[in-house]
Image 1 (cartoon, rainbow over the protein chains, first blue to last red):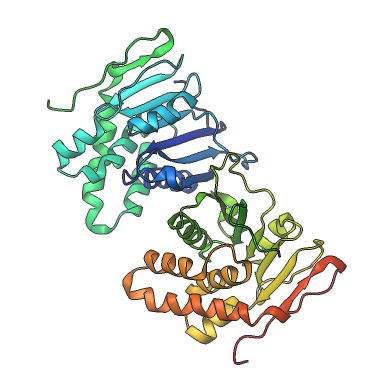
Image 2 (cartoon, rainbow over the protein chains, first blue to last red):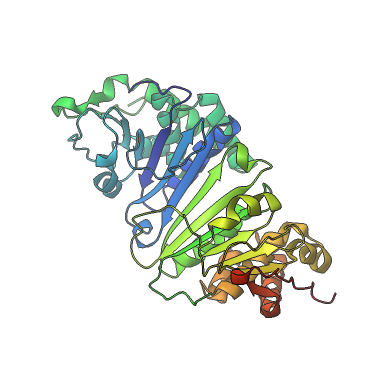
Length: 206
Length: 206
């Protein structure tokens, strides 16, 4: 995807099922952007669809006051469940980036011109760190590395300021693992303008 | 204000300055409504205006999926600072309810048909509980009691599940103080259709 300019409005949507830490990932992005002096609007939905089904948390980042606070075509979509993929993936803006958990989501790259990046976040969280609970932080690292919407160190600071002290080391590891995972995933991306099946990167060390 | 029906969409906006716990108040409302099976969208803004100036956190509650997630005319506005009053008060829907901190906000009831309810939340937090930090929870209690948007006990449960165990008693007291404060404030309300100056209720015991 094209590198967003500093002045651009960027829309992000994190989606998955309840308990995957979607809201925390979005909150960390919002707080990192705020610390950088950006305008930020964050929206989350609750309700029947947020329990068990596909839930989402959205962030809009801009340099100017945000008059229209609704996300319609995310520039960057993070998708951590099949239900979320089916519900939200097609909204991703042409030219945008769709990052998904390749172990949980069977992607169908029908959306023209959306870069698909599938990485095994949950598997890496379990295999490398023994903690499935940090899947969202690994995914956040990958999102930041691949999208370039915010500087990686600013988001790392926001991660560390959000988690209790005793979990900082684990979350720092998870975040950096996500950064590295995405860096090694250049091959794993497919711009689906011609309906190519996206490949997925193996877990590191596998 | 008219009692909202169960099927109505209700828009709430909490506003104030940074550090007043506006976001927590909105989050508690959102979680209480979610626990009752409602559809809920919560939105918060960050950025320069959220540091020092007027910040806001909004909640939309409905029975049906929420297609249009932006708050334009809140049915209920909670206002905890003069800057927030000046920025947001006029948006309140005619027939709606505006609850404000009478010790911090000089209200100018120019908006026709909006019920103004001024209560000294910050003063009560300091005088009755010795903890200014629970001003938001007192205000939340008053909002729930006056607006009737959600059952008082459902919101109390959401308050208690949100705060750490050692602060539960304090927050329970604060919430119930807010409920009582609003119950005694019927006289303090002025529907400003004819530009009456709203009166404000004294602190309990004063």
